[in-house]
Picture 1 (tube, rainbow, N blue to C red):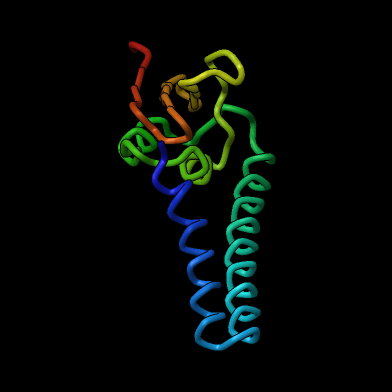
Picture 2: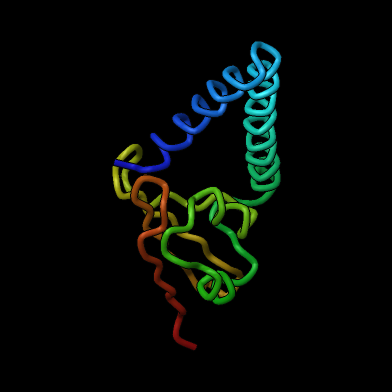
Length: 130
């Protein structure tokens, strides 16, 4: 089970409860407003990343070799989309795990990334022979 799926909501509830115990209803309102602001910031960041990616061809990246050097296991799919500024070309069946995406550059070099539960598990660079 994913630790963040439990910890982040539990920390939010704990912050609201502690704010209520320390400052009453005003503290609870301030803590709730802070949590809503945090969620809105993350949402707007995600929308900005997807808006930039929507303006580029699917599966295209400027340099597959540079992308390959920047990738690290554990990165989220959203982080990889932000780096490439393009949505990857889906290679696996839709709605199945693990998800496999491919990005290709103008020299036909390709980076194939495998994501399990939204986290990068492995990546592979393929370059055409000259």
